Length: 276
Length: 317
Image (cartoon, rainbow over all chains, first blue to last red; front, top):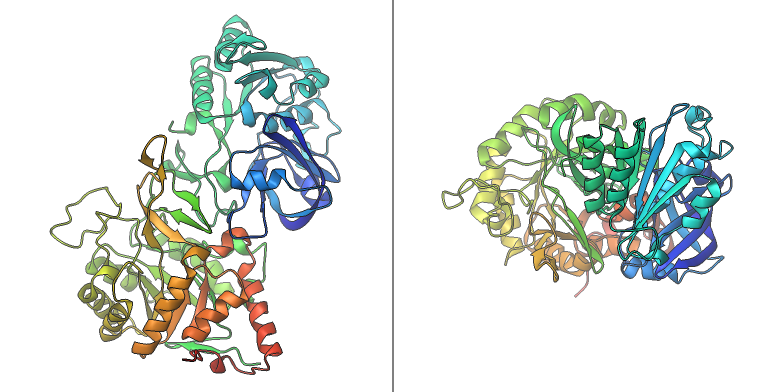
């Protein structure tokens, strides 16, 4: 984990209200694993006060990127930052998604602004040269992209973030939009359930990130079809490194029913351990 | 340059402490800074028994501030001694353990339990957590509701402050600091009660009881309904309260409330604080406390002040 002022390489609009911010930092990038996140101080002021957490979208040897939606004052200021500006970054933070074994069928389910960490994950799963420092994370993986099924859901087709980039990775794409402007009309969990029902071989794992109602629905589907499921949660967060205990999430795990903190114990949890 | 300052029996090598609940048990910050450079550490509040804390959402940001309702999540006194103290001891800087009880008996219990633990230099009595239910008065029925209307904290009642501090005073010879809450009409009267009870110092202020409402759901954003407001938005009120207490009470004052930089810290010191605590700033910048210490040294160098004693309480007019 490092704290440094990182230079902006690019801050580009990719969809209505959505931006990709690319920042230079070899140390943070090299250590970033899919599912981990950074804290970004959006401004040098006291309003907005707290840093904002963002999952990695990509991470190479020299730089990393995040994909964010403008939802409030902090992200609005962030969207106005220009190439060459510098931002205080803390990361990589939290625990990422777990490793995959050779030959496994894997399912990734992303909704809206929860899609970015799944792109990072899909890249790592597909591209074994991706810089992932966690040792054997990617080296254990030697399957073809067609073992990977990615389900993307959004309100409409313009918010299907990074759809084309997923396509380029060669993974199997399954799309659902609320308004039917692309793919099936309805929730992504509906096509996920249809897929699981039709498969003779149960996938080894589901990885998911998105709005909480979607995570809950994916979690229920995963339990119904007995597929282990990892969810990356989004909760209000202050420090990002376990000091404030603000980002609590109720779990029932080996330590009993309790409040876990999403920043250091998550943000990836076993779906079955979360009390929804 | 002499930055030394005294709080009860504890001599701090510099006046920069970190505030309870914003610094974990220090280990969380080890990666970012040399902890040994701090004047001292105030731990996250410890209760006799473990506490799970409040359900989420626990925090929400406000203009230049934040509300929290963590609910004193902590491992309890026994686990604190086993799991947190060994590391804290290695730092060889003053360790002040923040403690809280729901009754006078519980305050006494937790201090009694911890008093013989090696490495603890003092206790800060958290008389003012706004986010837990207190079983203080018969009017306050046992209830899980810890929002403002149910909170009858010690810090709101001068006689209760004196009673709690006085009872704990019987149990320990270590430095005893009473942490006061700001939601009172006369903060100096509360400090005087702590003095009468036998406190060695007072620290102020804790967070303000506050609320944010989601206008769409028309519900409070925090699950606890109310939370404690901290950050730069409360600073001018905190400075005023430190100044009022300094004028009327002989005890050393530890000042806090939205300190983000050296200038902020100096306001508190000039108003009369013998030491300061850095709180919310730790969340934005984990090494904020040491940055503030450096700012302080630079100010003294620039202003040719060789001793912190010439700054403390130097407010004019």
